[in-house]
Image (tube, rainbow, N blue to C red; front, side, top):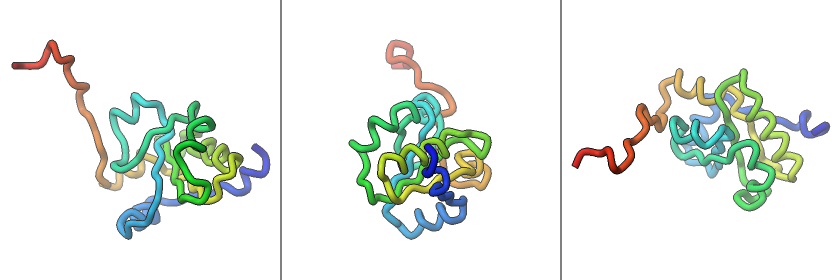
Length: 126
């Protein structure tokens, strides 16, 4: 992934919030596993787990679309890795929201959050 590293650009929380507020056409991608995504995520994001990114990105995104990837926090390596993969695949407008979901939540931004998994149908009250 040499070469791609020097092209990795980051976006901070304030810039991401501003882009969303202005209604800019962005694709916000959570690169964590599906279980984590189903539990908590930034509203409007889509889930493409890192192990599936190389295969799915060409099917889901246009090469010039603005793609912003995120994972949990600065300690997580999934979003910088995802950014490098997308750049290698020829996507030209990729940003890493390196502060991730933790900063989003701590700043009071809205999240989709499931506190408890839903009961199986046979255990739900009638």
